[in-house]
Length: 471
Image (cartoon, rainbow, N blue to C red; front, top):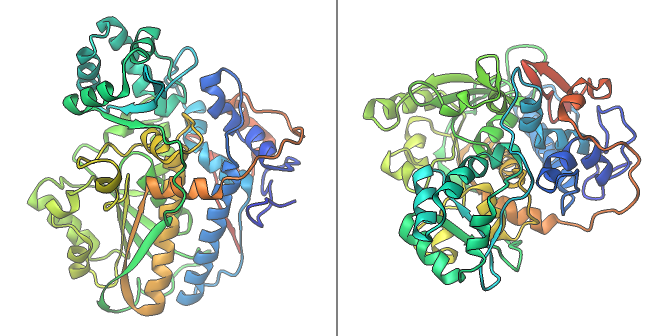
């Protein structure tokens, strides 16, 4: 059987009789992760695995175009809804099968908050001092504020966020206008939950960049067992999930990915749980990449990045607003050292969007805040971050196709907001047929299950093999 959203099969390499979206969500851990905030496995409010699979299917088709245009002997591609689901839970699966226990939030629950006048909203603070200032301005109990910081900070990893009743009860007594005023004064991001879903944005934009130039890469790869992007080099300067996941998918398509990290390495490398000497969650998104350290805050570091870019076919970053301009590392800057480069920016809100709809100061563009603003059916699983990475990867491969056809470099722009819009646009009513497979309640057990042996591999921790199979 195939998905209603895409022609790909449900099970793929997973040896289970998956007959629909809910079967996939149940068997592959999506219900387990999404349901943590409720204390029981729970289906997501949209056909998430099928939507991700549709994008992976489109990427595979574009990758075949790249292979054909480069003379690479790859003729077929396949994916499945189960592979899409395993990609979506890959960080949680890696954490559950790491060498040490991961962070655990005892209890259920989590935002959005609700104001005294009934407005649902999300707040975001990536710094403990900003968190403290916000609640201190509301005269919250300092002990409750301190207890809440860790589960709030770790909700990205745990998919649950039990907060003290003192805090949720406090916001429930105050008007939204006051809460918004305090957020602005304390540097806290506060976004209201949208009543109308954003569903009219393109998933990504691709524009020509510069004049015609020579071929992408050096033609066809020089070794056997090739993949569509084999022989191409991707230079990546990204943090967190969206950008690294896009780079990870390009690596799965065969590209050599060179990851630029700050001196001493990305701090997320050391976030528990650990698999060997690296964070399991970090490993799930960054295995197979070569690492170069450079301080982009210095002239020497930026010069080093430009030197690396001179040999790259793709440059991918997810820097904050204004950073590329301040560092003189815009698309036009990299095109000067590498004509024909595909320059991709994976942002939170889209460079041109926040000033019109969210005020003059760009709010933090993190998963849950974007979910709220876009009106995505809420989850404390990082569904927008993951889908944002998938959408970005599709934009890059599309850019490579256009580059190969036109001989002109390309600039690719995607965002979490555009990804959320696409989720909303493709949302469908979920099937209510009874489940035909058991519900996964333990990702560690999934990692040991022989029925998943062709879909996952133990590489320090358990991670999905690939989102595609090529022939």
